[in-house]
Length: 500
Image (cartoon, rainbow, N blue to C red; front, side, top):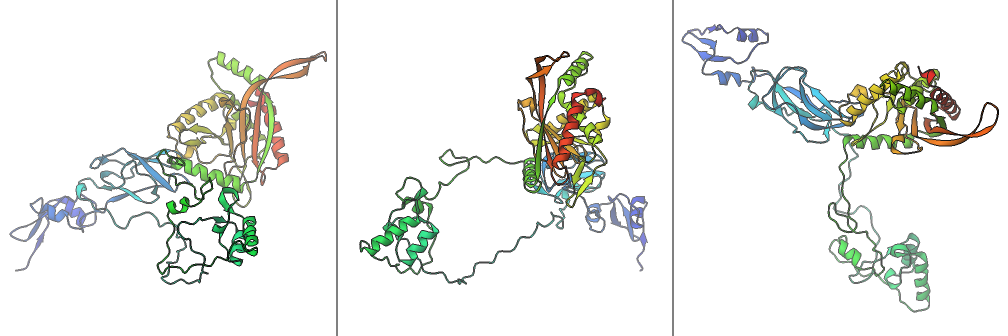
């Protein structure tokens, strides 16, 4: 009897079999006249077959900044088994710049959290979670085996130690227990080997117990006068020589300072100990970029004093109108206006040559618990003083809370670092590549200066001065250009009317 197939009335299975998406929670029941599809007792068997089960949606560690290589899972905002929609916040990821929220790109159910919150140094592309479609058995989702972080840069393989020595090593004098061991200078070692002498026959007089050339020459003189005899090496034992233990190495010398420094143990309050401080991703990237900047960028420095009398007067007038702005807001505006007047300074170095930038975005250094961050005031030359002040306040708060978005700290054409609020008179700052310049701003301070009145009489007058130092990349901004920039910057800052 020929078997016949009959599709039941479930339209979702029909759509699935002909290639349209639909729900997969269907069953297969054998009837009297053949096979019919319905919600029967064999639903679990049918649902568990691989040809009807959809692959889970993989959540991978994303790249959230150009310099990001690893990320930390700060907190999961969804739990396993919880429904998610496209755009929902899944978790918070700490990058090398800030803490960024990762949003879901598909609808479904968070089936598996592969990397728990609090995990650190997760490589880009690593699997951190799985999402399945609604209606699927999320409790029994399988973790794919073909997903993992990209392979690290291969290092040259070290040759395995051969059981037989490939290079013949000359026989040296073995250390006999109970005798002194010395640190030999190269010249002393050469003299002792030439005359078959041992350092234990003499006295080390060098710093930190080093047996010097002069000590070796004294032994040679004693041998020539017959006061000491030639020291012959004793036959080495057949057993493989092992490295001396720290106790044996430090027990011999009689001089006050040890040959080997004491072993440091983290967390134990003993002599020579230390405490390890875990470095965040942000601090590691800052250290890396600062090192690259100081070692690859030729820094040049130029300093100028600016009179803030007019700025302070304008600021007081604004306070009367309940408009609160800081001196740093005027400095940002003055720098942006000067860059607009001198586009040759608004450049960057792309590795091969200078590149003039079409935008004037000022990066403002903000000190946080995790390190120094530089949120950006975009198109600063077109903004007013109050608008700049509002932007600085909002971005500084987001930076300290670790909530900066990538577009709020990536880029920038010029940086400003102000330590005047900490009482620093003047300092120099490190350039933030690929930018070409950074302006270091100290505190404003009262200074008595000798001036002339309208009648030409000399008199002492108090001025409020501020010292600014510009670090510039000599490859694109030479000393003459940096000097002209500071001269224009000073003129703009001392005449706030120009900043309107």
